[in-house]
Length: 293
Image (cartoon, rainbow, N blue to C red):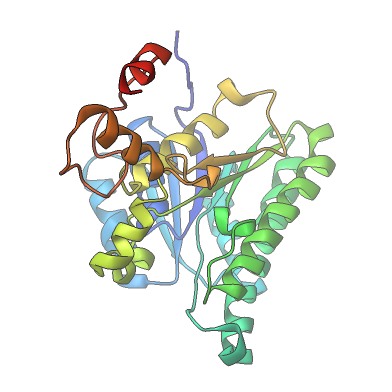
């Protein structure tokens, strides 16, 4: 049985030339999905599309600023002219500044909200219109972030934009459900993308992030792409308006490092690392603790 059955479906992926979007396009290509790569970066987008074409995949690159209505209309028009349908939309395009709230300037706020919120809205709206017009029971996946509920200092405008995307997704899911169109959100955390590069290059920040991730590693773009694949497949037929965390457990928030104090005490190993979950979990029972008394 073909669990995905997505061959020859047409997918638009915004932010498709790098990071999570690029990982989504790569995975889709393996399943013979025809990809429309939408990105503001023309050179990287064209090179990526050409590489896919050379490998025998259907791929079309369209340069666009998704916060511009005319650019979005152009994306929809070119996609429909090329492939005559749109089955899937994955909104990965996003930006973020880094400013304390008291120093946040209007231009940074507008740039973040325009790109992340307005851009996602415009793409969803125009794609949904085509899906309804041609009676396509499509799939829309919006990439939000765990920062929609768990803010990080210096990312106030980003957190607001991601919270808006999550709210927008629920609203769209409600209205498009009668047409058989599923709309869902993925909420990643700490994924190794160009946006995270500067953070992960600072050892203290990288280790601070790792301390919050029970699975003990930074996420890969492919981790998110796999969740996207599930949501655009028939396996998720009965799922709409959902918010799926792809975080390695980071969204659980709870403190984990204290577990290692127990492990040091129980095993008499004094030199265990401070970073949690670099070792497999040890299972203890009540008798183990009684022996220490």
